[in-house]
Length: 261
Image 1 (tube, rainbow, N blue to C red):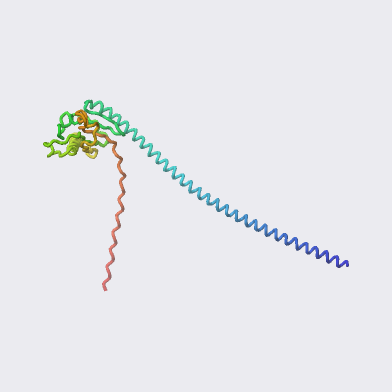
Image 2: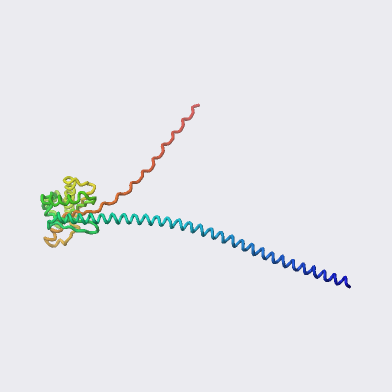
C-alpha cells in the first residue's frame, strides 16, 4: 500500500512536469512568433525610413536647384530693371533735348509704350506729291539726327498720307498713296544714312499709306495732320545668342584595297 502511494505521487509529479513543459513550449513558441513579427516590423520601419530619407534627399536636391534658378531669375530681373532704368533715363534726356531742338509747331513729340515718336507734318519736309526733302525739312532732320545718332535705338521712319487719291499726273511715279508714303519714308532713312552716317542697321522705313490716320479725314486741317512723317525711336532689341556650329562629321576612313591574288 505504501508503495502504491509513492507510485501515485511519482506519477502525479511526472504528469505535472509534462504539463509545465508543454505550457513552457507553447509560451516560447508565442514569444518566438512575437519576436519574429517584431523583427519584421523593425525591418519594414527601416526600409520605410530609408525610402523617406531617399525621398527627402531628392526633394532637398530639387529645392536647391529651384533656389539656384530663382537666384538666376532674380539676377536677370534686376539686370533688366537696371537696363530699363538706364533706357528710361536716356529717353528722358533725349526727349528733353528734342524738345529744346525741335521747337517748330509742326513737329510733335510723343511717348507711347516706352517709345519716343517725333511727328512732322509733310509740308515742312516734302513738296506736295513728292518724296524730295525740302531745305527746311533737312534742318529739322539734321537736329533730330544729331540728337539720336549716338544712341543705340532703332530708328523707324514711317510715311503716312491722307485719303486723297494720287492725282493723274503723279500716277506714273506713285500709282497710289502706298508708293508715295513708302518713298518718303525711304528718303528720310537714306538721308540719315548718307548725310549723318547713321548705321543703316539701325534704320527701318515703312509706308502706311492712308490707313493709320491720327484724325478723321473730314477737314482740311485734319487731312494736313494725317500727311506726315513719324520717326519712332525703339530700344534696340537684344542680340540673339550665337548658336554653336555643329561639329563637322569625321571624314570616312577609306577602305583598304583588296589584295590582288
